[in-house]
Image (tube, rainbow, N blue to C red):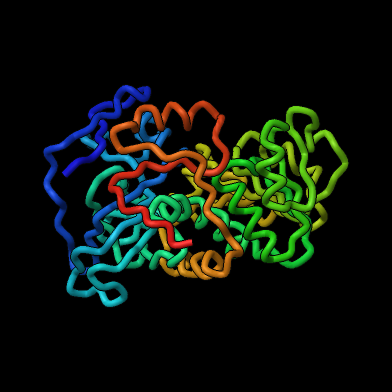
Length: 335
């Protein structure tokens, strides 16, 4: 099978196409998926550059990628939720068991992938594989942060720092369903895209710094990681919460030692959201997609062989929404 591999860390030139790989085998609770599409996430860029090696190690060759969309072609004997032929998507994890203090194991940039049953959901009928692949990691990040972590409530004031990216654009759509009062922060050149998602208001960070204002928010969701809790604290309401999904050195330490979160600066007002694979949470997102409440926002699609160009494009900062690698051509539009 074909896959993209890393044999060293570095710039985009270290991404190599490998065509002589064995199709992986599965354990009792795992599923073999014929993979049609994979999304590109900042995690993949950090992995390629070697920034995650202190956590993930350097066990080369490494196949990047977490978001997959494809068809089930084999199931383990303990799998009961999915059948051969099902169209599925998810944030994959090739680890046989969920590891609370570790990363999901990558491998999405490949024609065939293995993942646990609990990471997958059925693709909504109105989505192509490319559209489906654009959802899992960003959708789970936004859902787990807003719904499960801070438990956002109707009419609360939310600020999303980084509203034009993958997580931010899904977060706006989820916030709309909760009926939050959402302020979206983006560059002025991305105003039209963000405006199309119908936030309550928009701030352009190239013209105005919200941390220098007297505005107050019940939730500040920093999906960029360039506005720390210390910078944002004055902009929080009395019971306001700052939450970010961008890992820092403190985040790594607190995640691996959850009983010592306060030691690393985390508390009821300063939170982090470490996204985890969850088919159950993705099922909830799928319901919103099926109703038309959440729409995939695919910016550009590259072929697997164009992965270097895709990573260059991702690092350019031009894109709004998601960048996808199309691995197999079966993207029927069901709309």
